[in-house]
Length: 593
Ligand code: G6P
Image (cartoon, rainbow, N blue to C red; front, side):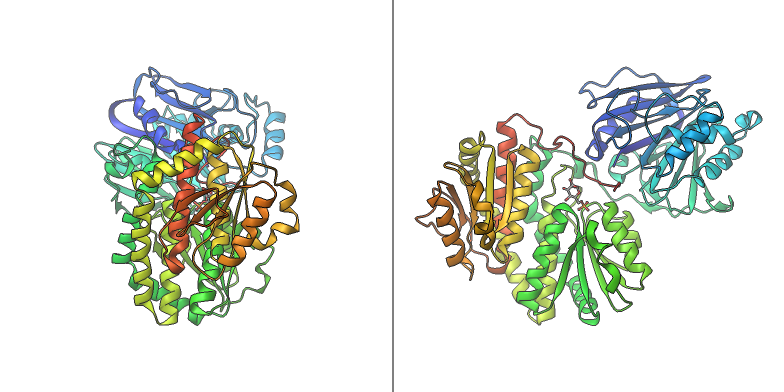
């Protein structure tokens, strides 16, 4: 979940581009940051706990430099634990993403061999491991350093990505297992990053590093080797299609509000480009014996919504499982099963593990994924890109509604009613546009002002609106730190209602479907105990203390109704003076368990 960026150029670049690029990767972790710069005879390291400062520090120019933004796993958030980490001699430095699972054993061995550690991290182990295998005479031989990295990496357990800066041979060496790294080339330099987003404006072509490869980045470009036997390999260059506008704020104050507003456009792209893919996915589902939707966080709620959609529209039982729990339920997978993995980033380790488990059992893996070239994209048998464009706020919004759109369409294809699915998506677009008008946003802002100082908030929905309630609560709590819990409306009286006190905000999703009478009874039960009821519904009801009107969109209502909740999370965070794009403790790409 850490951000990684490095470059090697023929001329001296300003090392500030490392810091500028790291800013684009901060969504991967923002506990601390650090830069390593290859200078004449030594590596200069600048690293600090905390966010990257708004004004870049003064850094010397150099033809080789790299940097890191951290999401702490091993070792607290301190300057010493920030990356890069040096070996004992200071001739090499390492940045890392992942967890070295056998690091205690390796550290004990290295310490008993006389290595001195300067941090509590698992990452530093790798610097000393390479140092241990690198002989004094190897310092002038670039290939010998690659060999040392290969053999050190062979001793490391876990899912990891490392970049090593070796200043005598003026190269960056990259190696990985599952954790992503992408090499970029263009404009006189070669770059490496944990996400292609950081390469926009610098590289015009990219090579996604494979687990079976080691990359050496030198002034004359990329040298690729086989990780097992060290033989040379030919890179698979692809054109980098991301544009600078994809990563700009385009006048919005934050990525979160920009991305919420992009949702109608994303759905339009899906409508235009994806019906054939939805047909292929429908075909895979109907041919499989047992289909499982898996995802984490917001993607997990999209999976749950999918199981409702397939049930009511396609009359098919499609299971949904939280990806981190999938391995405890995978025993019945066979070569006739289908696992549909949902993920914005395509890097969430629990989702990757679910996909790998499926493959081990001979099952097929389909992926609904936003980041092209991501680990999930590459390991799936069949991928549908979400076409949402880079999602840079840590909160997932447009990737969520994109997944729902594809699942809804696929369910209709299975049912033989594709045109109904397409019509529903047009209705969803219209409903989203209406939910984003200045008037609609003002109504949400007024509610944010009213509830901002509360400690708790409850959110209920039934049927298709149950996953919406869970997702709405997640959006609110992760960005505003207001404790919000989503529940199935029918479960209220089985315990949760004990928490309702006078004045507590309760959000009730009440579309005009078969859940309406029962969910309104639930709202009444909350109100009778003093709950302050916020109805998200096409029609006003007497039980609502406040009403957020939404367009009626039938089975596409989850796509529309989630929008006021996304806005509420955003405006709560803004009102509380919080950063809506980078909530505390979170990271966007969760590549560790
Ligand atoms: C993190 C993010 C969530 C996201 C989840 C799954 O926890 O903070 O916003 O829903 O990971 O991410 P994925 O990239 O797999 O959709």
